[in-house]
Image 1: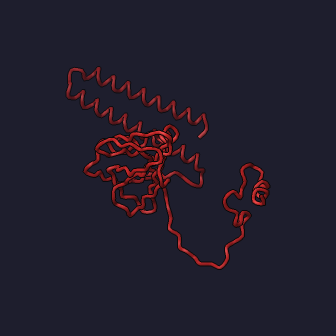
Image 2 (image 1 turned 90 degrees about the horizontal axis):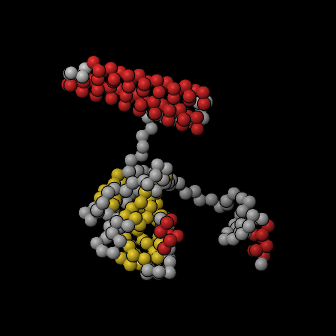
Image 3 (image 1 turned 60 degrees about the vertical axis):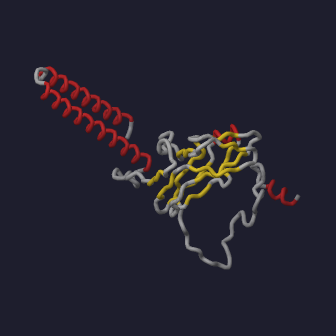
Length: 239
């Protein structure tokens, strides 16, 4: 959609809003003495306004997604948001997890503990979240450290990312470790990790006698060097 068409659409939308405002004003002036009738007409006007706004926004999103994806891959307006079933356990307190921004990849989980815990440098501890999930087929949940906590106090996850399989129904617990130089206090309701739902596949194993050749071959740790010059890797291996 080019700018001229978008401006026409916006102008048309403004005209509709102005018309509805005038219509509601006329209702108020002509029916001021009849409160019940006025309330009914006012509600009908609001419902009509709500419907127009929602349809206009929905259509604009569809057209924008079509433009991003190209003509060969039209956006499906009947697309349903993926559902993740969550169960709260008896010791769970507070609100359900939520995404902190519209485009966030992960949602935070909180510590569900009776009293504060102290993580000394190098110490690790299993922290309950009070939550269990029914993960959709074809997905896993990955547990990852919170970046702010990691850089400020050195708190990370021992198995990062931790994997929560789709057939697991038990409580999600987070293995925290203190990689910093000072004690860190963990309190109830602290946000201790972020969970990200990721697609996974289970391939079929095929036994072969040889693998196809690649430019890298069997080059392992350090084989690509430390700089942009690939020749450095060969020199490093010779040394």
